[in-house]
Length: 95
Image (cartoon, rainbow, N blue to C red; front, side):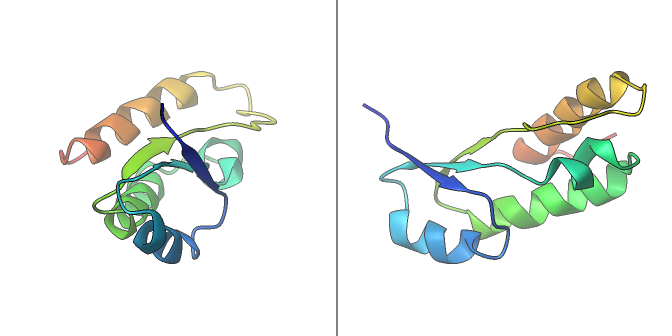
């Protein structure tokens, strides 16, 4: 049975990751405003996700994009975010 530890705070991920290692799944919820709601900047998204995953090295991580208020009439932002997240998680450079 999987156990989850939720992390809302980017700065707290390193300390949390050190404590839980691979015993739990770290559920990371990046700020949706930084991801898709207030403009869409693929480079910023990639950097944020890459830095967060680096801090969580050695952990099982679940990245959840939730609490989205708007995509400013551009629903393709969600598909593009998912593609960037998959590329970053697999170690590829996002396109």
